[in-house]
Image (cartoon, rainbow, N blue to C red; front, top):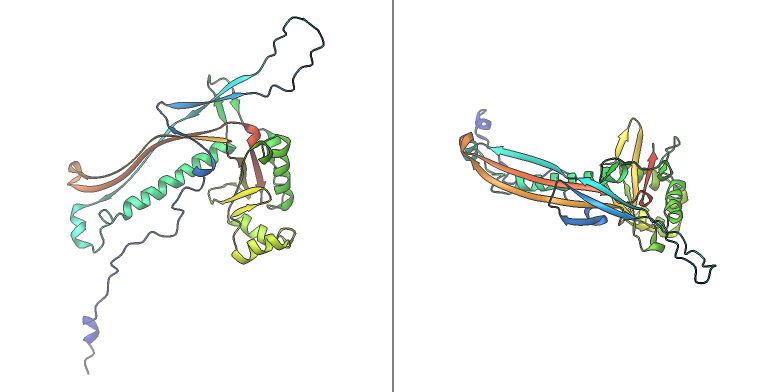
Length: 289
């Protein structure tokens, strides 16, 4: 019996290259106002304040009394982004799978681009934005924030957020669509909350499918793992369809040979994006642990 036969065993190499688990598509782009292509270093968001109620006329043939109405303009700054993957020309003959011609490098870059777009939208929602003249900073007011209170993401916080939108006239009664972002921690806490899952409808939707995605309690629920975390506190966001404006300077993917790098193949993605919060009353930040 030969004891060296194992030296001639062969290995079957994989002939495919697969992307690991990751968010590939943008989940927030469809939930905001798309301002389209932006020509410039920034774009403005113009607002007109509420005029209150109509004044009563108590004087016949009296003089006209003009009322004041507040005009403001916010400025969303465009930002530039770039990422490139190289593949040495000499490495190609040594590989079964070519990630350049196979498209895997470009697919990875597209996924990175989409995740960046979502991050820009999220940060614009809970962050600050300057006025067009740069003299005023609009931070999200404290009245639009639900503090963590050393508690998780509870039914009471969802109800409180819904009530804030109602008080602001920024809900479905005013023609708005409401969105709520959730991550894995919120998923666990909500599925374990019997005050939510005991209802027949929610029990069927959540416990059978194991997902929060869909519309319930007035919100469209959007899965998003990019929620900010500071120490042990997470900050998710509820917002209306018109709360955030998003603009695109350009998006360009490119595959080229780099003569200055010994003909190395390069796959790149470049883009310019910007976003800004249109109205503070249309965003609610919800903190939880």
